[in-house]
Image 1: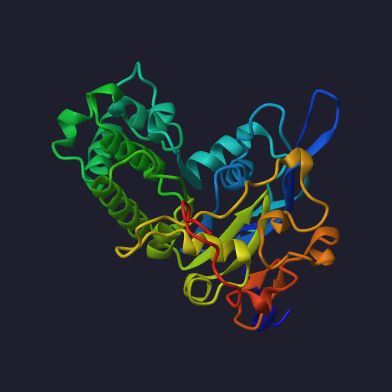
Image 2: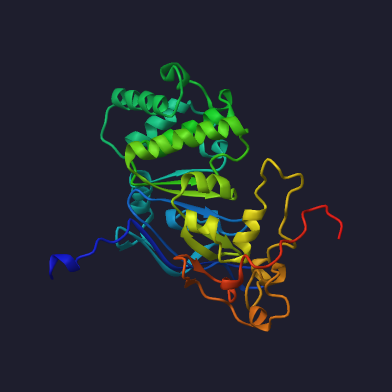
Length: 343
């Protein structure tokens, strides 16, 4: 085969992913419904959406960490071209620790409260590298220093409850970096942290990613946070991707009403009242036949196609992909009233 025809597969490729569970009546419920995306080497991708949109569940499927009762029912998850769905747990543990590192939303659930932080980091290193205890301790001090922990040798002997929330998040970032993974996954890494600490943690995370030349999947409900850190974004709603594209394109010209609603909900210095998208996301048990966002969408009013036919994720003229029957009209509708306003 000619050299110019040989293409390197993306670092991570998720194709037509479906994650299901079964309720007490035996009904199969699609929690993640036909999700596809790729992540290239060194790329930073943001996955954005409201709570319950399927962001975290998608990456837990990638990591092979789905909760009991949930399973990948359809689709492929390829790591460097190899499908890892159904991989033996022993092989997945090697992949998770060595090739992928995950930064969980709540560091207290990721750290063992009964063990010193340094010992937990050292264990993560020695599980995947043939190093002595002494070398592992040196590596721990180096990792903690790189994520902004001062006097790392002393602080590493502390227990998790002796560290603040921001410091514990740094420890979790250091643990994810321990084996120089090709992909870091950060699940709401700044939740429950004050604004100043959020900025520090994100700087630590970006520095870690840059030093390792790793790819990063940033999961967040905050469009502003994604815009500051991601070159490309996936917008999720009700277990599906409804828009994807370059961050700049999505901010300048969104092509899905849900994305537009998220953008309008971002507070600025001149905003007195926050905008909120009317209504609530549907339950996966009762997801509409057509567009899942239709009950909350201004564009769908009086249009039967939105109720009867599910829109597919299609490429638009601006280079983004949108799952909206009327994507060309997004931005032309009048904004809904801010929360608390009188009509």
